[in-house]
Image 1 (cartoon, protein in one colour):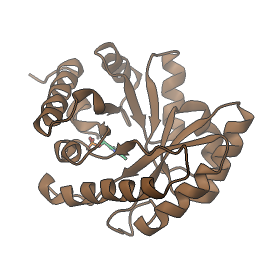
Image 2 (image 1 turned 90 degrees about the horizontal axis):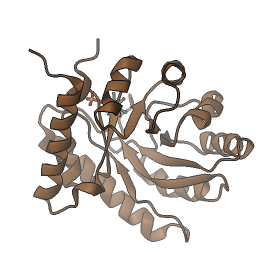
Image 3 (image 1 turned 180 degrees about the horizontal axis):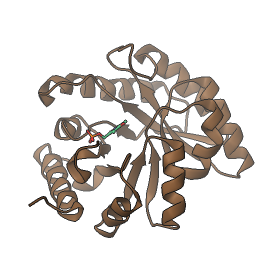
Length: 231
Ligand SMILES: *Cc1c(COP(=O)(O)O)cnc(C)c1O
């Protein structure tokens, strides 16, 4: 018997609560982003009915088709995939929080689109903590200047940092990268322009979210543990 989405979601929520409590954090300070890429509208609807408040998508076109099929749903929508400037307009139209800003050029384009649609777009800066050539994100050294550039854009609101660390089977080996992102956030916050609050740390997936919570994650992005393996 395979568990239903509702059962798996509940189990993940319990694990999040336990991980937060184990390190003395309020469970309410960690938000679960249910990652729905490759799964259809029915899976998404089922997760929302079971209590998912936040969903994450990686591809603009796929998200657009799914959101159209679903109509109005009471969820916060997160974009967690790689974003090209020429898709900025769609990202602004579809998403409450964009986790993956990694250039001034993209930031400026998002700002321009947000201005046109009368919106203030919340964004995170994606950091490539391990300097892997296969991954997007700015180098840790470039994060502070980028935060400054983005903070100056009137229609963007920079809310924190996101990372995709290297993959290891053992979450304890990933943990130093989560710790590095938190420390980077603290250093940038200390030098950030007035009014900027980098409260969000988007880090942790199915294999390592408990370690991420121990290191201060506020947004964990979880797909497989809720929806099963992606084909
Ligand atoms: C797919 C994806 C996830 C979810 O990964 P799981 O291991 O299935 O939980 C999280 N973050 C990003 C950026 C992703 O692309």
